[in-house]
Image (cartoon, rainbow, N blue to C red):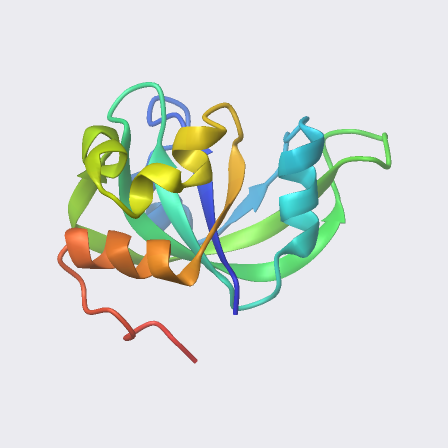
Length: 142
């Protein structure tokens, strides 16, 4: 299993709307590194859901429902999308200042490559976010 983080501006697509919709096509990504991360996602992988620009916090966990396919928002074959489904809202959000101050999390791509909209997360980083978010580590493993 791999772990990821996706960013969404809460004014455009907040966690609560994602939950209400029940799933989302994660499209519109126009960065090659982020696209490569979409390509590497596998069905069942866990994804941290981060509110960017306002909020600046990790608020929930999604799962990859459908592996990468041609982004339906463009005819350019270079761009991909995946389908995500909401899995669980964190008991408490994990803010960017907390991430930046944590010894393990300050090395996350969220911090080091802050403009990347789809980022890889290590198992250890994922577990630490869950711990800080008040959730049981290991509960989400296959």
